[in-house]
Image 1: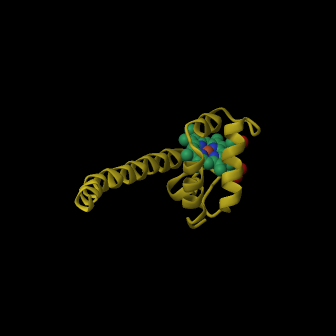
Image 2: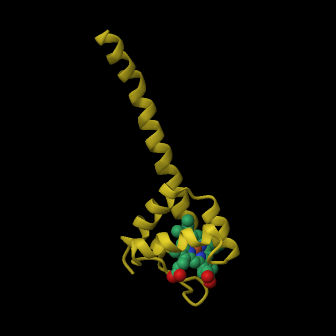
Image 3: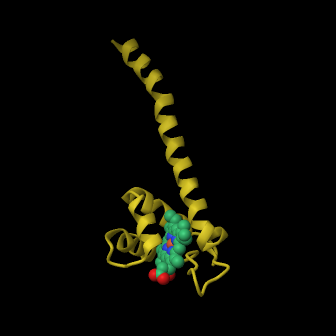
Length: 102
Ligand code: HEC
């Protein structure tokens, strides 16, 4: 019995690692996407058109992304961005940009 369990663990661990990698790749893709408009590291080169998001509080960023997704804050592109993001992704991306230097 024990060896069956060990064997299962052995089989499952690379799968778990791969799921983690996938989430990381998805997050990297999202970050690059945000940065095409919001600037590298979230510091906007054109703040009068696209606000910087670096160093804003995580709570603020989560709130805005949820508002875009829910259509409470209206903006075509950001609404679409929000639509593609899960709660976990919104939280992770907000945490990332909140940690960036303004
Ligand atoms: C195609 C360009 C584009 C992309 C890609 C984009 N944004 Fe935006 N974002 C904007 C614009 C433009 C605004 C300003 C919207 C407005 O005027 O209400 C904005 C607003 C925001 C705001 C509100 C900021 C504030 O100070 O009020 C946040 C937060 C935000 N974006 C986060 C993100 C994140 C995170 C991503 C990546 C997942 C992303 N954006 C991708 C263009 C973009």
